[in-house]
Length: 389
Image (cartoon, rainbow, N blue to C red; front, side):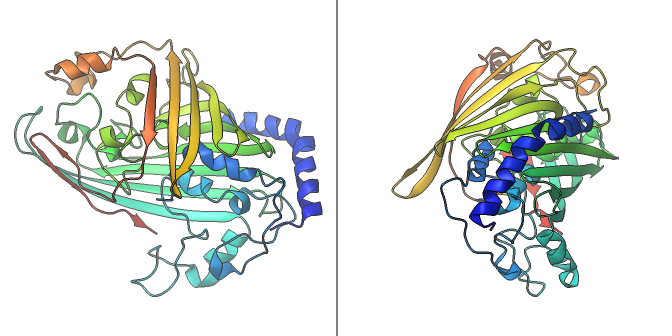
């Protein structure tokens, strides 16, 4: 960790650099894993706490830096953005083939050196098989493979400037086509993997996320760029990751999410942590962004979103309660044809009720068992555990 006098200099540098960083970010805009959601930003506030000693790389803790590092102060944010484990952070195991948390381990020490200098490479592969036994749009089985490459660059560890993090992700999906996978008959994808990189982008590779996180002061940070809304906001009671919990998107996200948003969005958001137990996030999000476009029809309509996260502990067990609000002037989903040309959907009353729900809901987030199998009536599906490379 950074010595106290250097830490104070680092945060003064953050404040002085703010106008420049904002300009750069606007140009860029042209189970402990990830379970804290936006509340992970509260760890950036190290004020009043003596920094811990620098640890050796095998412990995967903070490394010595001259500039404030997000990976040092709040390592939970990187797996939150990746929606998966990150090599070089606490929890990493390097050993033989059966012990490694990442399939390709540390590349003879090179990957460890990159992480110490603020560069984190992670590749994920998730395979899913489903079989519609009866009902739905049509019966039959299908197979889908999702591949995700994510790169995080911590500007503090890299020696660039304090309190910054660049994030970049490439997504792809291969296997059966959309017409053979969207066969269940629900208004949202039954498998979270079918939403990436986009519901109809079934044999494509796209750069889907690229954004900057910048702490302007210990208790306030900006997030600017293109991000995956399904990985960022709106968690549920059952879990928050298809890689760790349920594969069914409806168990990971409120079904309303894809009524307001596409899978990806261009956003300008702020995160404020006035206390250790309260995190307030909010901003402007574009509902027209797709993986295969940049600013096409950007902000013709808008989503205004805010989430208030209350963190607590009962008997030493952590928990969160989250209030969320979303306002949009985007046209409502066409319930008679939610998937366009793929639709011939017979809607149950829930689908009609879902589109008319108020934009305000409360979600109690609790840690669930590590389940990787999801089921729907008449549907057999299995998502194999993701591989982190």
